Amino acid sequence: MRYLTCSCCGIVLLVACILVAGCTHPATPETVTPTPTPTTLPVPPKGASVTTEDVIAYVDAAAAYAREVGKEKAIEEFNDPDSRFNQGELYIFSEDVHGNALAEPFQHEIVGTNILYMVDAYGIPLVKNLVDTGMRGKGLVSYNYPNPSRNYTIEPKVSYVVNIDPTYYIGAGHYENQGTTFPVTGMKDEHPAITTEELVAFVKNAAGYARQNGMEQSADAFRDPDGPFIRGELYIIAYDFHEKNLAHPYAPWIEGLILTHYRPGYRRHNRPADGYCRAWRGFCPHHPEDPGERDVGLCPETVLCHSGR
Image 1 (cartoon, rainbow, N blue to C red):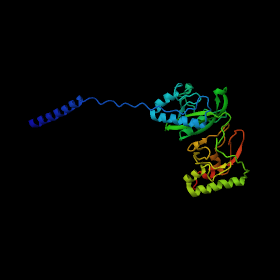
Image 2 (image 1 turned 120 degrees about the vertical axis):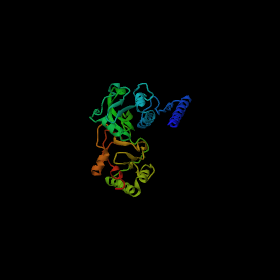
Image 3 (image 1 turned 90 degrees about the vertical axis):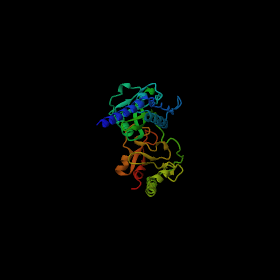
Image 4 (image 1 turned 45 degrees about the vertical axis):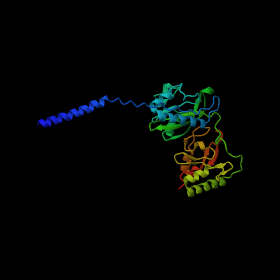
């Protein structure tokens, strides 16, 4: 027992020496979180017209910042009226998945309140539409809103929203004023007379090509402005059944965006084109340029959304 007791004491002493020795080493320095690299903001020059493409680039830069610094710091920054992310007409807003306002730099009184059921002048639930798009990925949403720079006149506005994480999204918008010409550039000046039969045959030909060649190859062909699916003012636009754009030869910047609630020059709510295509695979009304003019065109997405059908 004596030998056992001494052995145990020796073990305890050895452990104590090891612990003491460990305490004499210099303390490990704390990990310092590096300061996030400043995000370069693609802001249009002062006085220049803000386009939807400008808004997309601006929000994408803010989204990169939010993912880098985390939700708490990003929301604090976006709520600051003097933040570099608030550039006059361009500023970042944010809501969570339930429609609670997280960031409104010039309307602090609504931050922390639920605005899910806010509607525009025509009764359209604009926040619901923003949440629906923002929480599914990224996309454009059209609605009408008072324009403070024009005596609070109700004008068409389009916002671009991006999901940051499963709990919230951010966005920004701009007023379209007289309506956005769509597509903006690139359409040829040819305007031949087109019959309904020719229009149907044109889309059916594209549908057959899509079924034979698959989505990826077909999208490449449809987005080619010099390809076989451009005939004067006739061209193919492809969507999936989640209203995400797959190909547009004259507006490549909308590719990959969810457009469920987007109408260029929007002034009143219309049923999404995808709804027409799902329901009866035929003609649908749309507003190609002027919101006061109604036009009719065959929905390419009727037959191109699921090319394997």
